[in-house]
Length: 124
Length: 213
Image 1 (cartoon, rainbow over the protein chains, first blue to last red):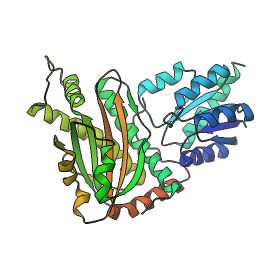
Image 2 (image 1 turned 60 degrees about the vertical axis):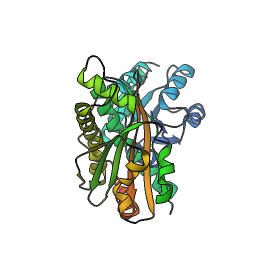
Image 3 (image 1 turned 45 degrees about the vertical axis):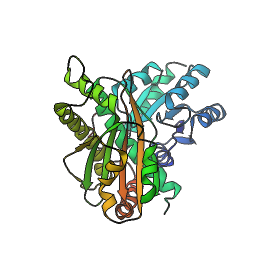
Image 4 (image 1 turned 120 degrees about the horizontal axis):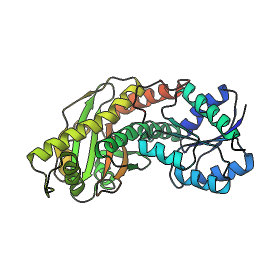
């Protein structure tokens, strides 16, 4: 079991991904924008950040860069409807440890988060 | 006539998924990355729709217009700045030297591009909501906003409100900018809200057969 920070400007998506992650045995905390994500990350110290890309204000790539700058060990899984190969590449280059596309499929979400948890342990 | 915040949120997320498929298709066609804004959902009296569309439509535009029907019916529009539309056709057809205006063959190419892009969007929209949508052949408009508005099917059903869902996009490293819009009459809105509510209540999203990049 791990603590997962779900960052998404859509309440519906936070609800959906939160439900999947809780059913997979994880604790879930939420943030609805980039600034709240940064604050919540340092308050809650989650093991994984489950991060949307297309958000108003700070988008997911900005949050990814900032988190990795402030904490090089930040373990981040991108969760987005954007299926462009360039997006996947930018996420990997930005240091994300997983990539899940919307609409969410429970098994894919759980698999990506668990794989990220395993992978990120090697960093620490 | 207002949507609740929860309804707006669910609709925005649904459209974000659908428009993202369109952006991915456009990215594949052009070989360039496509930047998509967060979609906006709003309800407008019909008389104010032109003004509301004005935020997406500036200057000379080429519009590919596809009417969809079924339990949810309305108009899907792909709007491109005129130079961007010419640029897009040139990129895809390899015309040399590049054209400055849209000729007959360019218009045909642009209509087909619109067909691919709008179907990418409406296909996932229908799949997620589990409704069967039928599409007309797309039509290309190179006319004023007022004339284009006249061609919207929702304008003909004498209803007083329209649901406008839109997002702007930009094809990186090109002059191509545009918007995708869906306009629905209120007759479809109730069905749409019901379908979206059913969608949000499913325990997990369905495993939609979409391309994984």
